[in-house]
Amino acid sequence: MSRRQRQLLGVCLGVFLLLLLFRYHHTPKALPPTSSLAHKSGVQDATHANLMGKIYPNTRWRNLAVRYPVTESQNLRALPQTLPKVQSASSKVFQSTLGRQASRQSAVKEAFGRCWKSYQSLAWAADELAPISGTRRNELGGWGATLVDNLDTLWIMGMHDEFKKAVAAVARIKFHKPKSPVINTHKVNIQLLGGLVAAFDLSADPILLGKAIELGDMLYAAFDTPNRMPIIHWDPHRALRREEQLAEESVLSGELGSFILEFTRLSQITGDPKYFDAAQRVMDVFYRQQKATQLAGLWPVRVNARAELFDGDVFSLGAEANSLYKSLPGAHALLGGQTSMYHKMYENVTLAAAGHNVFRPMNPEGRRVLLTGTVRTTKREKEMPRTWLEPQMHYGSCFVGGMFALGGALLNIPIHRDIAHRLVDGCIWAHQVSPMGIMPEAFSAVPCASEAECPWTERLWKQEVWKNAYSLEPERKPYLSVDAFIKDHNLPKGFTGIRDTVYNLRSEAIEGMFFLYRITGREDLLDTAWDIFQAMQNATQTQNGNAAITDVMVEGSQPVLEDSMDSVWMSQTLKYFYLMFSSPELISLDEFVFNAGGHPLRWPKAK
Image (spheres, helix red, strand yellow):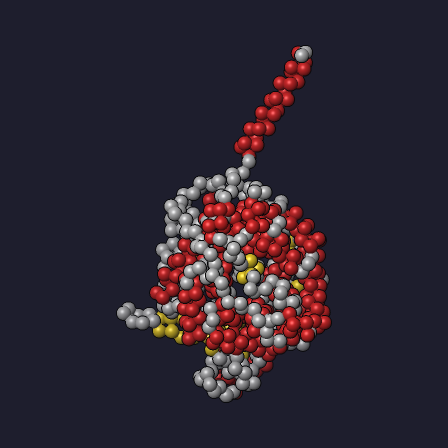
């Protein structure tokens, strides 16, 4: 061998050794074996287990040293129980109106397609598209919230080419390189992690599982506090620097208690119990505190996560808390009824809510509908708390009818079905009497003095309107008469004041209708849902998508729109409308539970 050949061979060997060293230092740490959870529990996630060997997520978060380690993880228990069938809507009933529902489904898909096309061309990989200006917005970490949030919607609507393009874009997201100084872990969890896990459950695409693990590991770092309570408004850069982290002293209970579904499902898929353990520890605190709050059975809107104090005096089922409450029947189902904890929590919640928050509003039609309000408490030393109801309905509370329907079916509580019908009808009524056919974000009503009899009293209604007039607008012009106030504000009979006139493209009304329809087979809900969809489309559509409305109480003029299209419009509102007009076998409630972000997570099946 010549000298030149020996030199060339030496160079090649050197390069080879460098490549080996690089591979050694950059190969991700192996994932925990699936047998640690899935096999012991008897859960059949065979497809998922086979894919685990192909997943190599970025391990920056996984390898981050834990400051407050868990000494013993809580594992998922043995075989799931056989739970009752909850879905009553049948394909036979659907077939009888197939033509009408198919055209409605197509209209919803077309609306989604317009929004998605605009997002692709104007704001691809951004968190949101501003639908009037056509500009990009990044308010949820800059990780493409609309992109990730709608993976499952694309799959459900059969848009598989667009789904493949979206997955390719998701593969390039770097969750290990956070862009924002502070992120909301609650929103990232229900929208992004929920979206990734749901899309993987539907498609079995290994890229999505890898990204779900990467994001799950990042969120897990937010639980690294002395009491293992997560930080909701979290600085991920502090965590990466391994600085001290403390849970917040004031946080929304609905955000703090919103991790159980996504983290449980991620543990079921991967076989790594740490995710379930993290979320379950938080729910254990909620369980211990449930009977000790000032309104036993419910949790206050705000709690002290650092000290685990739940001594607040405001109790609501609205947007500030709904992620917590709607997860309870879903957690019972996802865990296969292995523990009575979520059954008990759900029963405690519904008993307290039905006795304190739920009320029948006086209305001229005499409709026996129900709404939910906010309860406030006062407590003197050595006395039981006193409660009073603020009869103010929030759009975010419209999910409650669906919660009663699902929980009643899963846990065999027949009276909950009756309550569910009336709660859903309450939100339908509020849409139907509003000028645009869209319920405002928040309004007040007159609670009936008696559940059995509630005659319409015009004088009482006007008294309550007048009482609210100056509390709503203390700095506005004085009104000479209550009639002038009613006319000026387009108040429907039954509404005593509009606390917030906006419509932010929310989904809770159609969510409640969807669950009630699937669980009871009530066919009139199909026509009602279509009317509401048309009202929303007519009022919110723009050249580039759909926009929030500043005032839904305006009549006879073009609505004033905000340059905002939250990703939930596509990922939740349009998804629920699409499923409403689809065959009940598509995403059956006997196979999937929905998280607070509208993402369907598959129930594990016993061997």
